Image (cartoon, rainbow, N blue to C red; front, side):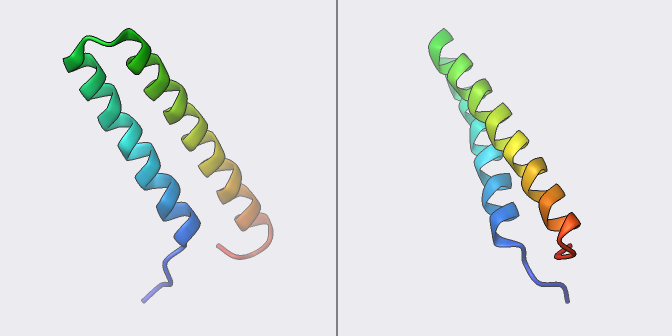
Length: 61
């Protein structure tokens, strides 16, 4: 069984929460909430891909 990569799991959960936040903001009709959740999603996904690339270059993955 492979070991869990906790930083990547945390970033995946954060991205999932941002996606859920988009849905909640749409239901609440909050334009600011929608944009905040989208920006949070872009940041979380970008940081996740950046972290994965560094881990792959260091031989951790």
